[in-house]
Image (cartoon, rainbow, N blue to C red; front, side):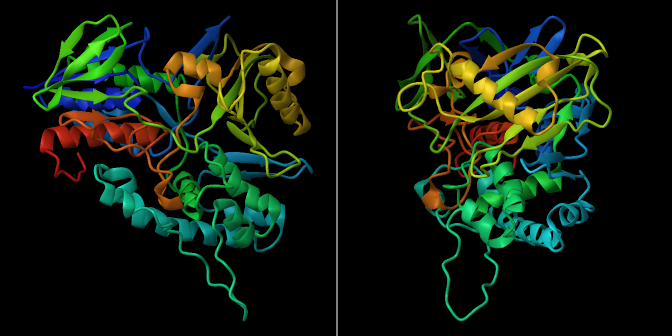
Length: 475
């Protein structure tokens, strides 16, 4: 039985802690804040409650696997997961709206009705090619650890299988996701369905490789899921599973660095100068030189609304502005009694990508900066006919500065999922550190940002620790 210190109590870190404890190791988690969950936070006031981080779960199998392998109770016995249906409603400035059902069938007809005959087939054809990206990169991008420069080099080329181009003149294949959307979908609003979906993951379509279309494929194929009680309910369930496996948590304790002993990780040094010895260290907090290339921040506006939730309101709406090159505004309106004081009130969460906080970004605490940005999001929702402004009891705005304060992530950015292509610049940091016995998990480690990816990082680090450096999963 080895002594293992896990730095941070975010989702990837807790996933690693639960798995390692199940494997028989003595695990201690040190967390600088007073609670668990990392970016999966909650804000509550006056009987209203809001998720302040991710609003939906994709690839729930990652977390189902964690619960199957760490205890007797499966995920569904700990958290009620519900598939969101319709999957999303898209609204455009010209008044056009289209709802995509959760079931794979039916989307083509809805798109034909909204954008004209052939739109649905063009969308389906693009997703079929995106499926090939998923099948060719699923293992190295999601299920296998990243530990060597050779693995990174193998993912430099974009894997998207471009459609055959007709005509006598040879044309350059689209080099970015935005160019791909224009070339293959042709109708600007249809193209915005793809670019808007990718923007939701914090990925700028103008710089992302065409293979980023895989994000839309995964979402359409595996669905969007919402835990009853909000995303925080998932974080609470993972924390409880850790406690069941006798993981020790030490809150209010920041780790500064990994200590070396005989050429390998030998523990961590805390902010107060104390040390915690260990045989291995799993680092799940910002630091260790890891960065988040291409990442942006996110502005979030929490709305407490008077009046009941209108019947038929979709859980998730993407509001596309008149300038389709701008990221859409996401509006989440879960039908969840746990988030509101009574049936005569409703919650809504508006959000959109936003510049990072600080140098090179925006001074978000500056007077008026947050309010002006929040007003813009609400105005976009009003222009789309969502009728929220007149119902607002109060609102709370969270900026990248708040994310930086709460999570320690520099600039308050949200790391993107790992993607192949773009010369490997969309890959996260390796799962191993510079010292033997040091490992990385969380959004800054492979396979990158997002709840499912964070959960996989915990599985990857566990496999490397339990099975050794040659392990290639899955664990």
